[in-house]
Structure formats: C-alpha cells, structure tokens
Length: 305
Ligand SMILES: NC(=O)c1ccc[n+]([C@@H]2O[C@H](COP(=O)([O-])OP(=O)(O)OC[C@H]3O[C@@H](n4cnc5c(N)ncnc54)[C@H](OP(=O)(O)O)[C@@H]3O)[C@@H](O)[C@H]2O)c1
Image (cartoon, rainbow, N blue to C red; front, side):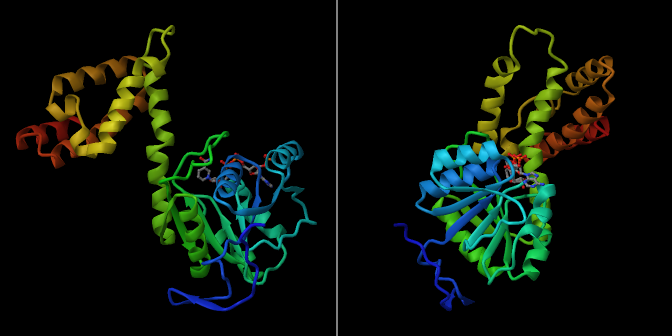
C-alpha cells in the first residue's frame, strides 16, 4: 500500500494554514491528458513512489496503452468524469486547458495544476470558483514522447498560483528530482519566451543554417553536430560572453560583410535581418567581455544596424 493521505486535517506549514497533510504524506494524484507531458509525469511520479490513481483522456488507444503499461485506471474524459484525487495535473494542449478544466466538478480545496509555460494561472479561474486551489507547474524542459523516469532531474519547475497548492507542488517537484521555484505571473510569461528562444529557436536556427548547405549527402547533424555540441557545452560552462568566438568577437568586419553578401545572394531578407539582429547580441557579449577596442565597438555597432 502506498504512503498516501486523504485526511481533512488542518495544519500549519511555513506559516500557511492548510488542511492538507501532504507535507509529510504523499498525495493521491490524477493526470488529465495522454500526451508527452502526461506520460513523463506519470513515469517519474510512479518512479518516485507516488500513487497516480487515474489518467483521463479523449484518445482510447492511448488510454489503453497507459492502462497496460502502468496498470492504472485510464478513463475517458467527458462530462461524466469526476476525480477525488488530492492533486490533479492538467497536462493538455495550452488552448484546451480552460475547456477541459470546465468539465471538472466542484472541489473541496483540492489542487488543480496545469503544466503550460505560456498560459497564466488565471486560465483555471472557473475551477477556482468551484473550490479548487489552482496553480501552474511548468518544467523548463523539453519532453519527448519516450521520456525516461529521470526526465525532471535537475530541471527547474516554475510554480505560480495558490500558496498552499504551490507548497504541495514544490514537495512533489523535489521528489522527482527537480528544483521548484516560485514565479510571479509576469515573470512566468517572460520566462516562457526565454525558454522558446533557447530551445525551439535553436531548432529554428539549424533550419535557417540548412538553407546555406549544399551537400545533401552529409546530414546536418553530422556536419554541424560537433560544432553545435562544443559551442553549447562552452556556453553552459562559461556563459555566453566568455564562450563567444567567431568574427564578431574578433572584430573581423570584412568577414561579417562577406557573410551578409552571401546571404543577400540567397534572396532571404529574413535571414539577412536575423544575422544582423543576432550579430548585435553577439556584439553585446563581446563588449561585456571587454574583447574589443571602443573604436571597433562603434564600427561594428554601425555596421550591424
Ligand atoms: N512537451 C514539452 O516539451 C512541454 C514542456 C513544458 C510544458 N509543456 C506543456 O504541457 C502541456 C501538454 O503538452 P504535451 O507536450 O504533453 O502535448 P501533447 O503531447 O501534444 O499532448 C497534448 C494532450 O492534450 C490533449 N488534448 C488536446 N486538446 C484537447 C481537448 N480539447 N480536450 C481534451 N484533451 C485535449 C491531447 O489529446 P489527444 O491525444 O486526444 O490529441 C493530448 O493528450 C502543454 O500545456 C504544454 O505547453 C510541454
């Protein structure tokens, strides 16, 4: 039997009065959704000894897979769906969160958390009016279809919303090896833009770079992979200012000019602007690292305008 608690006992944790005893006992969890995040949560929560009672979704074949793989209740998500779990994770597409939350019955203070980085907690406001304690639980990690149980280890998980809900979610986050931290709503919105820039746009940059590659027999991952891996390692080890190499860090204006002429010949105005825009950020890194003379800085600033 799992170490679970469902008692309506009032306690005080870190100055917050709560009827929950989850700070010492593990809450019962339900997950709504059958996609990447739902599977990753289920896998890592089960691995960390949590009792995930039910998974609910609209896709029957995915539900069957969950049922077989984890030996849990896997039910259809419709107007008959009801949950008594202490914590419900709403791991559905961003645009579906409010509609799916609207299906839920009223609650006696149980916790409802969505996992979106882009959506505010307010998207669950209707559920809050029905008695749920609402929050967002956003792991700063890209989740593939076949996430391993340790997928959240060392990952920062931003928490925003009801204080009591965040306390309980913080404990869950720590149990799966993550680093929970509280964010304001405004901070969360900006954080998501930063996450998209450093993750999704890395893929977009590779896509842009591919438009300049001529040899179709060598895969991009093979050709540019070692360079990308080493660059990323250097950025993570030393920070962007120290890790920067290349023509801007050296102040090689003739090389930068040559690159711009090459891009111009491909008739990609967007890539031309992108090269210059990112060049200005590279210049800022070189300036912050005091690599260039003041004269060179001014010259490059003008050139990359
Ligand atoms: N994957 C990541 O890297 C990542 C990282 C951080 C946060 N998140 C967040 O996690 C949440 C889930 O993302 P995901 O990556 O798991 O997406 P996903 O793999 O595409 O899965 C989305 C899930 O939402 C369900 N869904 C969509 N519309 C629905 C509706 N109207 N009613 C009921 N269910 C609906 C889908 O059901 P069907 O299978 O039936 O279509 C599927 O189960 C999102 O809020 C996302 O922003 C994802």
